[in-house]
Length: 94
Image (cartoon, rainbow, N blue to C red):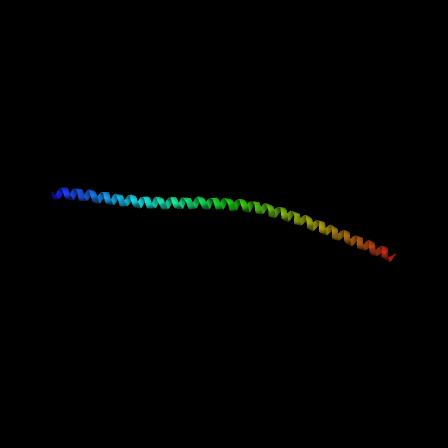
């Protein structure tokens, strides 16, 4: 009779150990799934930020090109204005 109790106790102990191991594995799996979801979310954020940065760089290049064009136009106006003033002064002196 003692052997029967010992056998069933051993079996119950083994079952309990397995249940605890299964619970621990499920906890780890849950953590891994959570980490996976965080990584996927972070990946999407990085992708979006990269696209935004690419667009911002393109816009900056456009603005820089327009600014250079405006500087060139401004320089031409200054040169023309100086030339016109010179001509005006020459006409006034006659």
